[in-house]
Image (cartoon, rainbow, N blue to C red; front, side, top):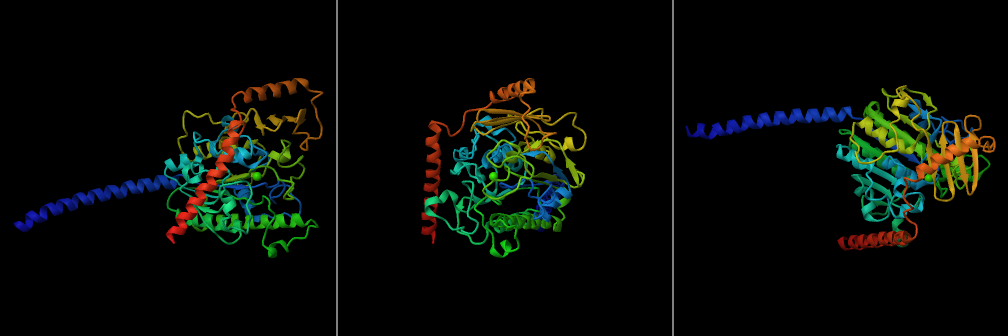
Length: 472
Ligand SMILES: [Ca+2]
């Protein structure tokens, strides 16, 4: 009897536990099923990568990128893909907010020192809220102080450097005078060895391996192929273009391509590729400094001509995007967030104006018109541009030119004098757009904050260094 009394409740608890655990298993399975139906997101950003420097684009014969080409082969390559800016940081800001970064005063690379304003919601924060595992690896360039750190902007983990735009590829040890530039794992400053592009490969592959059971968002922001021109000597020796700078650039590109290959292999090995949306693009056009090639496009990085802003851009999502597609739809880096948001079924904030558009309907013939009636660039250096359809108006330090991009890809023939009405229409459209924008983050009084930001980051890093030494 006593035994029964004692055992009864035990049995009933056991039944309840059973039911609860069954419910748990069912909920887990539902969660797992929902998680499995949501795509993984991989965004790969290349840095200062020339429009012609991928072998899936019209390229010089010395260029071979078999792995990055796999993304285009299994999906879509955009012939008219654009960066939001002709330099690194504002494009990255637009990418992670889905908006024209000028809306919040972010126009230039040095605006990155003030940081991506904290009232801006990032794609990482949105996906994290949706249950995604989120990781950023590589170049950040969106703020030096801790509140702007990737781990405070929606990323669970980070390996890379906060600022500025460039990093030595071999010297990965901390420099006390430039701690803003130190390699960090999450928020900790670390010393590392190796070749930085290879390390980013290691981190990206490890992230996929560790999170294969849940939907994940991997942001792989290479600093390759940005200067300094540095690559392992045995790789450089494989190239002989007659231009020693170009040989190093190609070696850097080879290593980046191999890193992308390793990441794609990892997705395939784990049978994740079918349900992974992969985006690849460059943050601005090829630079003169790294001997990159923009092919037929006029000019380089730092310019609003096509060579500064039209970039390699591709996207793959097997089953959803037809393989080997070439699209002439003009798209922009800020389109990635709304595209990813729609693909992931994520709810984007309702009180934010997103300038970016979901690209997928344009690829499946469901879009009724162009994604963008007009696209705008303003680098706050007396260089602006607006493109609408085939027409592009460039304002280059006081000189206004009108180009027909369908007929004149290389922007050689200024049609402004023949088409004053088109000049006026595009100018009015640009002026209207400018009205929504805020003044530069690092203008005037904010310049103080800019220097302060770097100093505060150094102070923070020194504090961490002291703490680390104490712990030893
Ligand atoms: Ca760049």
